Length: 100
Image (tube, rainbow, N blue to C red; front, side, top):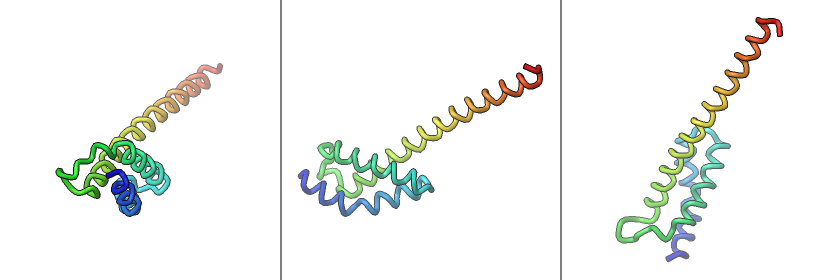
């Protein structure tokens, strides 16, 4: 079964990349997340149950879910960085106003 997953994964890579690109709208981000998807699929291939559905659909579902999670985490990280920069800017502006 593992060989079957690996062969299917090779065929599925362009489709997974397209899914991630459509969701992320950024080629660099899509490349990173696609790699994460491929690693996750390889690590979790033992969880696929052929009685529950097609392998390609399982791979697409794993990819979509991981992409949503990765984009959410990136958004949260970006918000934290923006907050830190805004706080540093506000501190600098206060220092300039007080003449320090």
